[in-house]
Image (tube, rainbow, N blue to C red; front, side, top):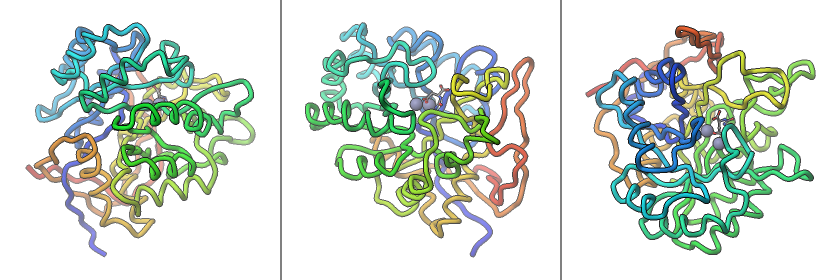
Length: 348
Ligand code: NCD
Ligand code: ZN
Ligand code: ZN
Protein backbone atom coordinates (compact mmCIF):
# COMPACT_ATOMS: atom_id res chain seq x y z
CA UNK A 1 0.00 0.00 0.00
CA UNK A 2 1.16 3.48 -0.82
CA UNK A 3 2.51 5.72 1.94
CA UNK A 4 1.13 8.83 0.33
CA UNK A 5 -2.34 9.94 -0.55
CA UNK A 6 -3.56 12.99 -2.46
CA UNK A 7 -7.23 13.90 -2.30
CA UNK A 8 -9.49 16.83 -3.15
CA UNK A 9 -9.34 19.37 -0.32
CA UNK A 10 -11.96 18.40 2.29
CA UNK A 11 -14.71 20.38 4.01
CA UNK A 12 -16.17 19.96 7.48
CA UNK A 13 -19.96 20.14 7.53
CA UNK A 14 -20.34 20.53 11.31
CA UNK A 15 -17.97 22.57 13.52
CA UNK A 16 -18.44 24.78 16.59
CA UNK A 17 -16.39 27.95 16.18
CA UNK A 18 -17.80 29.61 19.34
CA UNK A 19 -17.23 33.32 20.13
CA UNK A 20 -14.81 35.65 21.93
CA UNK A 21 -11.59 34.17 23.31
CA UNK A 22 -12.56 30.60 22.39
CA UNK A 23 -13.11 31.63 18.76
CA UNK A 24 -9.70 33.29 18.76
CA UNK A 25 -8.13 30.17 20.25
CA UNK A 26 -9.55 27.62 17.82
CA UNK A 27 -10.50 29.43 14.56
CA UNK A 28 -7.27 28.54 12.73
CA UNK A 29 -7.48 24.83 13.38
CA UNK A 30 -10.52 23.67 11.35
CA UNK A 31 -9.80 26.38 8.74
CA UNK A 32 -6.23 25.25 8.11
CA UNK A 33 -6.84 22.33 5.76
CA UNK A 34 -10.60 22.45 5.19
CA UNK A 35 -11.81 24.69 2.40
CA UNK A 36 -15.30 25.16 3.90
CA UNK A 37 -16.80 24.62 7.33
CA UNK A 38 -20.34 24.88 8.57
CA UNK A 39 -20.18 26.88 11.79
CA UNK A 40 -22.98 25.93 14.15
CA UNK A 41 -25.36 28.68 15.30
CA UNK A 42 -25.74 27.55 18.95
CA UNK A 43 -23.77 30.53 20.25
CA UNK A 44 -24.70 32.02 23.63
CA UNK A 45 -27.32 34.11 21.88
CA UNK A 46 -28.35 31.85 18.98
CA UNK A 47 -27.96 33.08 15.40
CA UNK A 48 -31.52 33.58 14.14
CA UNK A 49 -31.56 36.51 11.70
CA UNK A 50 -29.70 38.29 8.86
CA UNK A 51 -28.05 40.88 11.04
CA UNK A 52 -26.66 38.34 13.49
CA UNK A 53 -25.41 35.94 10.85
CA UNK A 54 -23.52 38.62 8.94
CA UNK A 55 -21.95 39.82 12.15
CA UNK A 56 -20.96 36.28 13.20
CA UNK A 57 -19.55 35.48 9.75
CA UNK A 58 -17.42 38.64 10.00
CA UNK A 59 -16.15 37.66 13.44
CA UNK A 60 -15.07 34.24 12.17
CA UNK A 61 -13.27 35.68 9.13
CA UNK A 62 -11.51 38.23 11.32
CA UNK A 63 -9.93 35.40 13.26
CA UNK A 64 -9.03 33.10 10.38
CA UNK A 65 -5.64 33.57 8.68
CA UNK A 66 -6.38 31.44 5.62
CA UNK A 67 -7.84 33.79 2.97
CA UNK A 68 -9.26 30.94 0.91
CA UNK A 69 -11.37 29.61 3.73
CA UNK A 70 -15.15 29.85 3.54
CA UNK A 71 -17.58 29.64 6.43
CA UNK A 72 -21.23 28.66 6.03
CA UNK A 73 -23.81 29.17 8.76
CA UNK A 74 -27.31 27.72 9.22
CA UNK A 75 -30.10 29.60 10.99
CA UNK A 76 -30.94 28.41 14.51
CA UNK A 77 -34.64 27.62 13.98
CA UNK A 78 -36.96 29.08 16.51
CA UNK A 79 -40.70 29.75 16.78
CA UNK A 80 -40.19 33.53 16.82
CA UNK A 81 -38.25 33.90 13.59
CA UNK A 82 -39.38 36.57 11.16
CA UNK A 83 -40.39 34.63 8.02
CA UNK A 84 -39.60 37.46 5.63
CA UNK A 85 -36.10 37.92 7.01
CA UNK A 86 -35.55 34.13 7.03
CA UNK A 87 -36.45 33.84 3.35
CA UNK A 88 -34.36 36.89 2.44
CA UNK A 89 -31.34 35.47 4.30
CA UNK A 90 -31.68 32.10 2.54
CA UNK A 91 -32.05 33.62 -0.92
CA UNK A 92 -28.96 35.77 -0.36
CA UNK A 93 -26.97 32.82 1.01
CA UNK A 94 -26.44 34.44 4.40
CA UNK A 95 -27.78 31.15 5.70
CA UNK A 96 -26.92 27.80 4.14
CA UNK A 97 -30.08 26.28 5.61
CA UNK A 98 -31.88 25.87 8.93
CA UNK A 99 -30.70 24.01 12.01
CA UNK A 100 -33.23 22.21 14.17
CA UNK A 101 -32.32 21.80 17.82
CA UNK A 102 -35.07 19.99 19.70
CA UNK A 103 -35.39 21.67 23.09
CA UNK A 104 -32.87 20.81 25.82
CA UNK A 105 -30.93 18.10 24.01
CA UNK A 106 -27.49 19.72 23.98
CA UNK A 107 -25.52 22.92 24.70
CA UNK A 108 -27.54 26.09 24.15
CA UNK A 109 -30.62 24.23 22.97
CA UNK A 110 -32.93 25.84 25.51
CA UNK A 111 -34.10 28.14 22.68
CA UNK A 112 -34.89 25.05 20.58
CA UNK A 113 -38.11 23.49 19.41
CA UNK A 114 -40.63 21.90 21.77
CA UNK A 115 -43.30 21.09 19.19
CA UNK A 116 -42.27 20.37 15.64
CA UNK A 117 -45.51 21.76 14.15
CA UNK A 118 -44.54 25.21 15.45
CA UNK A 119 -41.82 25.53 12.82
CA UNK A 120 -43.80 24.21 9.83
CA UNK A 121 -43.78 27.69 8.19
CA UNK A 122 -39.96 27.71 8.36
CA UNK A 123 -39.71 24.19 6.97
CA UNK A 124 -42.03 25.17 4.13
CA UNK A 125 -39.69 28.01 3.19
CA UNK A 126 -36.65 25.73 3.33
CA UNK A 127 -38.38 23.24 1.05
CA UNK A 128 -39.48 25.96 -1.40
CA UNK A 129 -36.02 27.51 -1.54
CA UNK A 130 -34.37 24.08 -1.88
CA UNK A 131 -32.25 24.70 1.22
CA UNK A 132 -31.15 22.06 3.69
CA UNK A 133 -32.62 21.23 7.08
CA UNK A 134 -29.80 20.24 9.44
CA UNK A 135 -30.91 18.30 12.50
CA UNK A 136 -29.57 17.46 15.92
CA UNK A 137 -31.62 14.26 15.95
CA UNK A 138 -32.45 13.62 19.59
CA UNK A 139 -35.55 14.06 21.72
CA UNK A 140 -35.83 13.85 25.49
CA UNK A 141 -38.62 12.51 27.69
CA UNK A 142 -38.57 11.29 31.30
CA UNK A 143 -39.09 7.69 30.26
CA UNK A 144 -36.43 7.75 27.48
CA UNK A 145 -32.88 6.77 28.39
CA UNK A 146 -30.03 8.97 27.20
CA UNK A 147 -28.87 6.19 24.82
CA UNK A 148 -32.31 6.00 23.14
CA UNK A 149 -32.86 9.67 22.38
CA UNK A 150 -31.83 9.39 18.72
CA UNK A 151 -34.30 6.56 18.07
CA UNK A 152 -37.03 8.43 19.94
CA UNK A 153 -36.53 11.54 17.78
CA UNK A 154 -36.55 9.51 14.57
CA UNK A 155 -39.74 7.65 15.51
CA UNK A 156 -41.57 10.74 16.75
CA UNK A 157 -40.54 14.03 15.16
CA UNK A 158 -38.52 13.04 12.10
CA UNK A 159 -41.43 10.93 10.79
CA UNK A 160 -43.72 13.95 11.06
CA UNK A 161 -41.25 16.07 9.07
CA UNK A 162 -40.59 13.54 6.29
CA UNK A 163 -44.32 12.77 5.91
CA UNK A 164 -45.27 16.40 5.52
CA UNK A 165 -42.28 17.77 3.58
CA UNK A 166 -41.64 15.18 0.91
CA UNK A 167 -39.08 17.25 -1.02
CA UNK A 168 -37.18 18.73 1.91
CA UNK A 169 -33.50 17.73 1.95
CA UNK A 170 -32.35 16.75 5.42
CA UNK A 171 -28.98 16.12 7.03
CA UNK A 172 -29.25 13.97 10.13
CA UNK A 173 -26.16 15.23 11.91
CA UNK A 174 -23.69 13.27 14.00
CA UNK A 175 -25.54 9.97 13.43
CA UNK A 176 -24.70 7.81 16.43
CA UNK A 177 -26.56 4.51 16.10
CA UNK A 178 -27.29 1.63 13.73
CA UNK A 179 -30.92 2.77 13.88
CA UNK A 180 -29.89 6.24 12.67
CA UNK A 181 -27.83 4.75 9.83
CA UNK A 182 -30.86 2.71 8.67
CA UNK A 183 -33.05 5.79 8.83
CA UNK A 184 -30.71 7.75 6.54
CA UNK A 185 -30.46 4.83 4.13
CA UNK A 186 -34.22 4.48 3.83
CA UNK A 187 -34.92 8.14 3.02
CA UNK A 188 -33.97 9.31 -0.44
CA UNK A 189 -33.75 12.99 0.53
CA UNK A 190 -31.62 12.38 3.58
CA UNK A 191 -27.89 12.31 4.27
CA UNK A 192 -25.97 11.74 7.49
CA UNK A 193 -22.77 13.17 8.90
CA UNK A 194 -20.52 10.95 11.00
CA UNK A 195 -17.94 12.16 13.54
CA UNK A 196 -14.58 10.45 14.10
CA UNK A 197 -15.34 9.88 17.78
CA UNK A 198 -18.56 7.96 17.09
CA UNK A 199 -16.43 5.57 15.00
CA UNK A 200 -13.75 5.21 17.70
CA UNK A 201 -15.56 5.11 21.05
CA UNK A 202 -18.29 3.06 22.72
CA UNK A 203 -20.06 3.25 26.07
CA UNK A 204 -17.06 1.48 27.61
CA UNK A 205 -14.90 4.52 26.84
CA UNK A 206 -17.41 6.85 28.41
CA UNK A 207 -16.72 5.54 31.87
CA UNK A 208 -13.42 5.37 33.65
CA UNK A 209 -13.67 3.25 36.85
CA UNK A 210 -17.38 4.12 37.06
CA UNK A 211 -16.71 7.84 36.72
CA UNK A 212 -17.86 9.53 33.54
CA UNK A 213 -14.94 10.62 31.35
CA UNK A 214 -15.97 14.17 30.38
CA UNK A 215 -13.58 14.21 27.40
CA UNK A 216 -15.48 11.31 25.85
CA UNK A 217 -18.86 12.84 26.59
CA UNK A 218 -20.79 14.39 23.73
CA UNK A 219 -24.33 14.55 22.43
CA UNK A 220 -25.51 12.19 21.10
CA UNK A 221 -23.60 9.94 23.51
CA UNK A 222 -21.41 7.20 22.05
CA UNK A 223 -23.15 3.85 22.01
CA UNK A 224 -22.52 0.09 21.54
CA UNK A 225 -20.06 -1.87 19.41
CA UNK A 226 -22.84 -2.73 16.92
CA UNK A 227 -23.52 0.99 16.45
CA UNK A 228 -19.84 1.77 15.94
CA UNK A 229 -19.64 -1.00 13.32
CA UNK A 230 -22.74 0.29 11.49
CA UNK A 231 -21.28 3.81 11.42
CA UNK A 232 -17.92 2.59 10.11
CA UNK A 233 -19.70 0.59 7.40
CA UNK A 234 -21.86 3.54 6.41
CA UNK A 235 -18.88 5.92 6.20
CA UNK A 236 -16.47 3.57 4.47
CA UNK A 237 -18.57 1.26 2.36
CA UNK A 238 -21.90 2.86 1.78
CA UNK A 239 -23.46 4.87 -1.01
CA UNK A 240 -23.22 8.58 -1.40
CA UNK A 241 -25.26 9.76 1.52
CA UNK A 242 -22.79 9.82 4.39
CA UNK A 243 -20.07 12.41 4.78
CA UNK A 244 -17.75 14.20 7.17
CA UNK A 245 -19.04 16.41 10.00
CA UNK A 246 -16.67 16.33 12.95
CA UNK A 247 -18.92 18.12 15.45
CA UNK A 248 -15.68 19.45 16.87
CA UNK A 249 -16.97 21.23 20.00
CA UNK A 250 -14.39 22.92 22.23
CA UNK A 251 -14.98 23.51 25.93
CA UNK A 252 -12.60 24.92 28.50
CA UNK A 253 -11.28 22.11 30.71
CA UNK A 254 -12.90 23.82 33.73
CA UNK A 255 -16.31 23.15 32.14
CA UNK A 256 -15.56 19.44 31.98
CA UNK A 257 -16.59 17.52 35.11
CA UNK A 258 -16.90 13.74 35.58
CA UNK A 259 -20.71 13.57 35.63
CA UNK A 260 -23.66 13.77 33.21
CA UNK A 261 -24.32 17.42 34.04
CA UNK A 262 -20.99 18.46 32.51
CA UNK A 263 -20.89 20.21 29.13
CA UNK A 264 -21.02 17.71 26.27
CA UNK A 265 -18.69 18.14 23.30
CA UNK A 266 -15.46 16.65 21.96
CA UNK A 267 -12.79 18.82 20.35
CA UNK A 268 -11.32 16.88 17.43
CA UNK A 269 -10.31 19.55 14.88
CA UNK A 270 -6.62 19.18 15.57
CA UNK A 271 -6.50 15.65 14.14
CA UNK A 272 -9.88 14.97 12.51
CA UNK A 273 -8.70 14.44 8.92
CA UNK A 274 -6.00 12.08 10.17
CA UNK A 275 -8.45 10.15 12.36
CA UNK A 276 -10.77 9.59 9.41
CA UNK A 277 -7.77 8.35 7.38
CA UNK A 278 -6.83 5.94 10.16
CA UNK A 279 -10.41 4.61 10.38
CA UNK A 280 -10.77 4.20 6.61
CA UNK A 281 -7.46 2.37 6.46
CA UNK A 282 -8.52 0.04 9.28
CA UNK A 283 -11.67 -0.69 7.28
CA UNK A 284 -9.58 -1.38 4.15
CA UNK A 285 -11.35 1.50 2.45
CA UNK A 286 -8.67 4.18 2.15
CA UNK A 287 -9.68 4.64 -1.50
CA UNK A 288 -13.13 5.82 -0.37
CA UNK A 289 -11.75 8.49 1.97
CA UNK A 290 -11.95 11.21 -0.68
CA UNK A 291 -15.63 10.50 -1.33
CA UNK A 292 -16.46 10.84 2.35
CA UNK A 293 -14.29 13.91 3.04
CA UNK A 294 -14.52 15.86 -0.19
CA UNK A 295 -17.22 14.68 -2.60
CA UNK A 296 -20.43 13.46 -0.95
CA UNK A 297 -20.88 16.62 1.15
CA UNK A 298 -20.70 19.19 -1.67
CA UNK A 299 -22.86 16.95 -3.85
CA UNK A 300 -25.58 16.84 -1.21
CA UNK A 301 -25.34 20.57 -0.46
CA UNK A 302 -25.31 21.29 -4.20
CA UNK A 303 -21.99 23.11 -4.02
CA UNK A 304 -18.94 22.78 -6.29
CA UNK A 305 -16.14 20.34 -5.47
CA UNK A 306 -13.01 22.08 -4.19
CA UNK A 307 -10.30 22.77 -6.75
CA UNK A 308 -7.22 22.30 -4.56
CA UNK A 309 -5.78 19.05 -3.24
CA UNK A 310 -4.25 17.97 0.06
CA UNK A 311 -1.48 15.48 0.71
CA UNK A 312 -1.48 12.91 3.47
CA UNK A 313 1.51 10.78 4.38
CA UNK A 314 2.08 7.70 6.48
CA UNK A 315 3.94 9.48 9.30
CA UNK A 316 3.45 8.65 12.95
CA UNK A 317 2.86 11.66 15.21
CA UNK A 318 1.51 12.29 18.69
CA UNK A 319 -1.50 14.55 19.14
CA UNK A 320 -0.70 17.24 21.74
CA UNK A 321 -2.78 16.86 24.88
CA UNK A 322 -4.05 20.43 25.12
CA UNK A 323 -4.63 23.52 23.09
CA UNK A 324 -3.65 26.57 25.15
CA UNK A 325 -4.23 30.18 24.23
CA UNK A 326 -4.24 33.02 26.79
CA UNK A 327 -6.75 31.96 29.44
CA UNK A 328 -8.18 29.14 27.27
CA UNK A 329 -7.27 25.49 27.78
CA UNK A 330 -9.02 22.78 25.75
CA UNK A 331 -8.26 19.08 25.69
CA UNK A 332 -7.68 17.65 22.23
CA UNK A 333 -9.52 14.47 21.37
CA UNK A 334 -6.89 11.72 20.95
CA UNK A 335 -4.47 13.88 22.97
CA UNK A 336 -1.20 12.09 23.85
CA UNK A 337 -2.06 9.30 21.43
CA UNK A 338 -0.32 8.37 18.21
CA UNK A 339 -1.86 8.52 14.74
CA UNK A 340 -0.23 6.93 11.70
CA UNK A 341 -1.37 9.48 9.08
CA UNK A 342 -0.49 13.16 8.83
CA UNK A 343 -1.74 15.88 6.53
CA UNK A 344 1.48 17.25 5.06
CA UNK A 345 0.23 20.09 2.95
CA UNK A 346 -2.11 21.80 0.58
CA UNK A 347 -1.49 21.58 -3.16
CA UNK A 348 -2.80 24.69 -4.85
C1 NCD B 1 -22.15 20.56 20.99
C2 NCD B 1 -21.63 21.84 21.65
O1 NCD B 1 -20.79 21.74 22.54
O2 NCD B 1 -22.05 22.93 21.25
N1 NCD B 1 -21.97 19.47 21.91
C3 NCD B 1 -21.98 18.16 21.62
O3 NCD B 1 -21.89 17.36 22.54
N2 NCD B 1 -22.07 17.70 20.39
C4 NCD B 1 -23.56 20.74 20.58
C5 NCD B 1 -24.08 19.72 19.60
O4 NCD B 1 -23.63 19.65 18.46
O5 NCD B 1 -24.97 18.96 19.94
ZN1 ZN C 1 -25.67 18.41 17.97
ZN1 ZN D 1 -22.38 20.08 17.17
